[in-house]
Image (cartoon, rainbow, N blue to C red):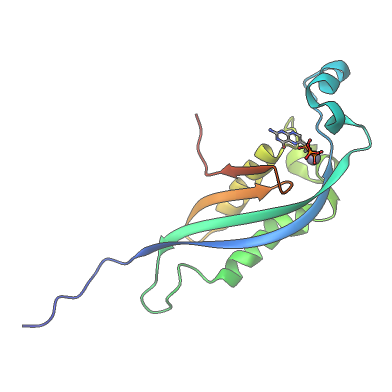
Length: 150
Ligand SMILES: Nc1nc2c(c(=O)[nH]1)N=C([C@H](O)[C@H](O)COP(=O)(O)OP(=O)(O)OP(=O)(O)O)CN2
Ligand SMILES: [Zn+2]
């Protein structure tokens, strides 16, 4: 009798890390100047300030039995470059990046993670799911977004 083959494919998470530099100012278009100063304090300084962001994009999917890959990480790199690096690196998030410039979104790391998540998810191949976006704004301030809504 022929040996029974394992038909289920193992599922894995792969992560690509990129770093980019950008400046921003925490300021809500929906609040008065006084409220902005009170809530965001030094981060509301009109001159803005910069960060070297570290971005981790994780995708999840079955390991292809022929290629041994969930997806080629070089393709994931290209997607991240299109969505993040080309748009945000060495830019002013509030003035140059349409997701912030043309909306009421404050350029917090939370909102940045959501913008990245939504942008990357549009470009992934069908068999792969976006698992998580993690952004280190500083060594001490880290945000994780996994597509959840309340
Ligand atoms: N929930 C959030 N809070 C804050 C965010 C944010 O994105 N989400 N961002 C900031 C500022 O951008 C700021 O750059 C970081 O502030 P802070 O932690 O104060 O940075 P410092 O390096 O100055 O912190 P130390 O206390 O000196 O280590 C603020 N809040
Ligand atoms: Zn900041």
